[in-house]
Length: 138
Ligand SMILES: N[C@@H](CCC(=O)N[C@@H](CS)C(=O)NCC(=O)O)C(=O)O
Image (cartoon, rainbow, N blue to C red; front, side, top):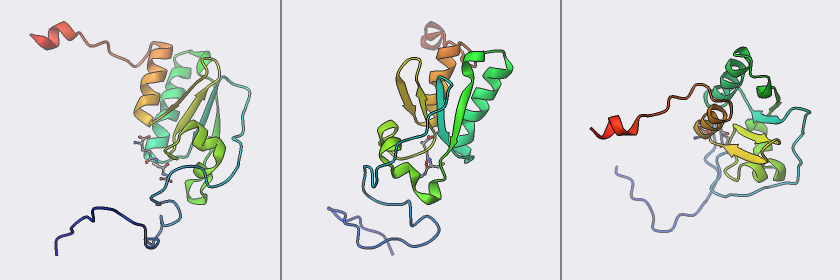
């Protein structure tokens, strides 16, 4: 039977299932909770999901290349328990998704794994191929 989306969507009930506690059609913090902060300029809030691990791999590769500025504090965000809806996390990523990164050196907060990868690539000048736009136009 085809699904016809309603004009105005309302949340009648939780969907149930494994992700019921985190799938919700609202935005914003549900509780006050500051994020922990460590001593390195880069603070990573993440978990070992496919999206989360991309950033860790990038940071470890930068460190392996000798970029000591890529030292970071990694904070576990157990998304099944809901810390991504705490006020501190929402202040970094209003979308309540890991991974999220704070660069205390530049004062920039970054979220979306691809955006974080690009941010780090530009910051450290590695793993980034400059596109020859002229060649693309030919
Ligand atoms: N497009 C985003 C997706 C991030 C994402 O979906 N994160 C999931 C885990 S892989 C998450 O934080 N889910 C928690 C939630 O939705 O409450 C990215 O690449 O960073």
